[in-house]
Length: 126
Image (tube, rainbow, N blue to C red; front, side, top):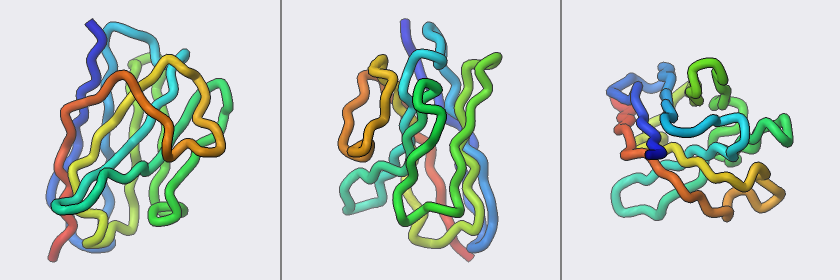
């Protein structure tokens, strides 16, 4: 069974950092597009980042560009989202997703994913 499990969320002060992990089981991340999303209370889900090994580069939402970095550890089938210089507006439930179509594409923020994790809460507050 294909599963994604996020971890690493928590409470952090503005300006702080967190690293989210997304562990995959039942499949190899090498051949999948990986996305990170977030959803704040009362707001629509927002695409944060997309990465595929095939394209060799990552895409980021303007709201997180320069502060967030997606990376992967293929040996552990784990994807990370390093979040620096966190702001209160980054508060949300963060989800990772995976899809066998191995391209993000120019409209990466609108693409769909077959597999989703359960989400991890990130709260940025003093």
